[in-house]
Image (cartoon, rainbow, N blue to C red; front, side, top):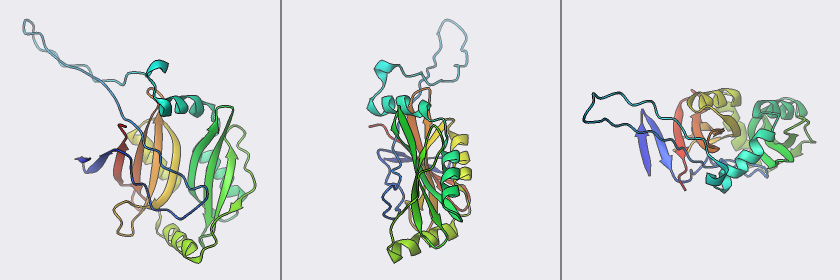
Length: 226
């Protein structure tokens, strides 16, 4: 079910995600849960008082679901953030641009699964250690001419960088960026968009935003209540 709030579509359930090229390490924008609590009321025997602003209740270990527990275990172990990981990946592939990054691995061995591409649409997967920041040898992806042409066109349209898209998302939801990907907007019309996942450390939920890659407008935010 979709709802509109201040011109932004709020989606409940799993997002369709951007239609990206068939990359081996394409980032799956994970759905997440936004929660908060707050209450207000008044005593009929006393004057009304304004209710205090609602605050998210920190999740306890016993209340975490499997996805939340996984994020709680993995996210704090990453000493290298998405921006540093993409910088390392770009350095490994000269004249390339960031396409995607996703935090993966285990608490003992976290890493960033990144994708960068050159302007002709040639994409490379680069695994970056999330502790040391060291990039492994780039792995070329699809050689399909149609895939390369599609990616090159997408790069040509995008004027918003990965860092700018992440900034837009974290201004809406304070937290840690764990996924980011450039793709086609859900509504089509040849619009390119960044999908950004932000994990909040008070409840270990993840909020996903789709952000227009030409003007930084938030197209939708995803609230997964499954």
